[in-house]
Image (cartoon, rainbow, N blue to C red; front, side):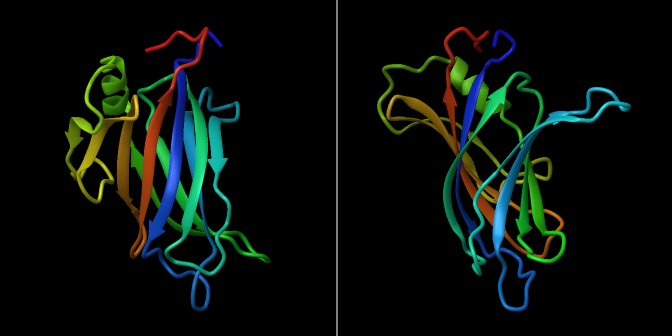
Length: 175
């Protein structure tokens, strides 16, 4: 537990205009991965979480909470969207990657006492990130929250909407 910094709650809200991989629709789900390869001769150490499958919908509403334990904030978080298939391997429907460093910098500021809805910082979309639009880090209900609209790569269309929250763990090394 002393190697953990805390927990990152990722609220996977919805998908918008996802790619069609079946005849008329898709059965999408999201996989969140974070980790790195420790040794090329040993299997990779990844944290891997996934949402539920939403049947026949290219604009799914997941509203699933996934919680990652964070020990190295420099590692990017990978988001992958798949189409669930019954008789074959699941089809890939795009991927995205996001950096949690700006979010964790805002959490480190200890912003208690700010008015609700205060924008702490803004992150602009660029070629280096997968943001579809500006992402704001906001002080809301006594917490630092970041809303993300990620444009999926390696696919014809699709975006995924997420919300990040930080959870401190007693006994962890903290931020």
